[in-house]
Image 1 (cartoon, rainbow, N blue to C red):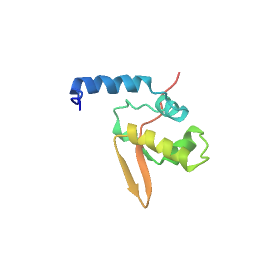
Image 2 (cartoon, rainbow, N blue to C red; image 1 turned 90 degrees about the horizontal axis):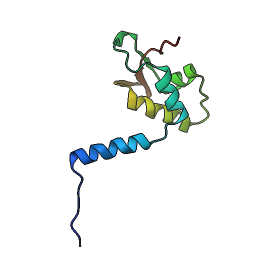
Image 3 (cartoon, rainbow, N blue to C red; image 1 turned 90 degrees about the vertical axis):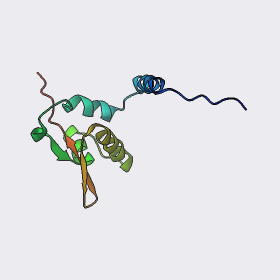
Amino acid sequence: AGEKHYLEVDEMLRLEQSNEDATVMSGPEELILEVYDWDDPRPETWRRMSAIAVMQELGLQVNSQRDKTLVAGILKKKSPYSSKTKGLTRYQVPPKREFD
């Protein structure tokens, strides 16, 4: 049997970045990243919203549980905080960007 090779930390980080660069973004993810200002530093302007509330605000159709799960996954990845009350998960969502 051959010797096993494990990636060093810096190699792993470069590989993860390379994989992330090659990942194709879904339509809902692109919309969520474009419409909301995820760099807004004012926590008082952020709102607690469920995945369905975000979808409704963006005009996305909730056709299946899969759609909701996709959006919830995006919010979970981006949102610094989430809470669950009576089975409903809400995420901290920033204000919408100001477009000229």
